[in-house]
Each structure stands twice: as structure tokens, then as C-alpha cells.
Length: 183
Ligand SMILES: NC(=O)c1ccc[n+]([C@@H]2O[C@H](COP(=O)([O-])OP(=O)(O)OC[C@H]3O[C@@H](n4cnc5c(N)ncnc54)[C@H](OP(=O)(O)O)[C@@H]3O)[C@@H](O)[C@H]2O)c1
Image (cartoon, rainbow, N blue to C red; front, top):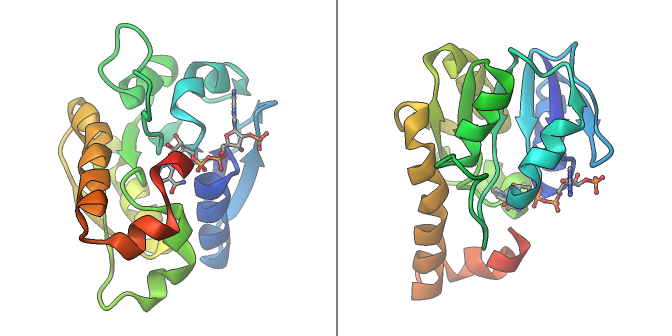
């Protein structure tokens, strides 16, 4: 599959490496933007508060299948939207999903060490299912469906629960590897 990652940092760059290992072709786009016309799937992996600016710099994204990985750390979605993922759909009008926002990028290179395949939540449009589930599996995750795109706000909030569990003690190792200020 031809994939474009918008944001080539921990998440975008890390997933790009995993997908290239699975024989996908990945175009990596940074903050200056670029063209995603050729891509069959677009992954948005920029800081949550830069989503509007980031999409504004990307050409050819209209109608594309987009997976939004962003989290809202100390910020809200753009005005008038309950989640970043719904904002993305309003700009692209294509199949849209939220995924990869509840697993730490710092552990991407250790997925193979897990005792069982790690789960990864996704919610979003049925039309995005095949792409989202394939890209989850090709990155080493077992996709877990969490309902329609209207649930994206819940999935974005879920991160706060992950932080709470880490701070509560369970998963301290996890927490040490990826403190919240790096997410
Ligand atoms: N890190 C994690 O474990 C993790 C896990 C789940 C979800 N998330 C979420 O995933 C997203 C990306 O996190 P990350 O850790 O990969 O971030 P990161 O390593 O800081 O990478 C951010 C990327 O976004 C680009 N960018 C920065 N400011 C921008 C702007 N104003 N407009 C357009 N693009 C901009 C950067 O472009 P340049 O390459 O040009 O600098 C860079 O490629 C965040 O929303 C984060 O909350 C992170």
C-alpha cells in the first residue's frame, strides 16, 4: 500500500519504519507539508494543537482514507468539534478513523517481545475498516474496534486513563519509558 505519514516523529516515523518492514511504500511529510495525492492511506501524526495548520499544508488529501493518531495533551480540539478526528473528516470528507493514539511509540521496536499481540483501539468509519485493520496488523497490533467516529472524543480522552494507570503504579515500566510530556 502507498502510505503518507503527515508528521514523521515518534509516531509517524516509527510507524513508517514498521510499515516499510512490512513492504509498504511510505512518504514522510513534515511541518512544511507536501502532496499526498498518490497515497492510498494518510496517517496524521502531528502535535494535537497543530492539526489545522498541518492539514492546511497538505495537498491532495480530499477524499482519502485518513487515520488520525493525535492526542490532545493540554489542548482542546478545534472549535466546534468534539475530537480532532472529526475535525480531520470535516476537512477531507473521506473515510476517517482514530487509531494508534493509545499505544506508546517508545515501545514500537519491542512489539515482538510481547507475550501476546498487543491490542490497539480504533474507531471510525466502516469504509476505513480494511485499511485501518491491515495497517494495525502490519505494525504488529491486533485492532480492536471501538465504534463509529463519534467515539473519537472518548478515545482521545482514554489517554488520560492510561496516564492515571501508569501514575497509579501499574505499568511503571511503561511510564518510565514514555513520560506524558513526551506524548
Ligand atoms: N509519542 C507517543 O508515544 C504517542 C503515542 C500516541 C499518540 N501520540 C500523538 O501523536 C502525535 C505525534 O506525536 P509524536 O510523539 O510523533 O510527535 P513528534 O515526534 O514531536 O513529531 C511531530 C511531527 O509533527 C510535525 N509538526 C510539528 N509541528 C507542526 C506544525 N505546526 N504543523 C505541521 N506539522 C508539525 C513535525 O514536523 P518536522 O518533522 O518538520 O519537525 C514532526 O514530524 C501527537 O498528537 C501525540 O500526542 C504520541
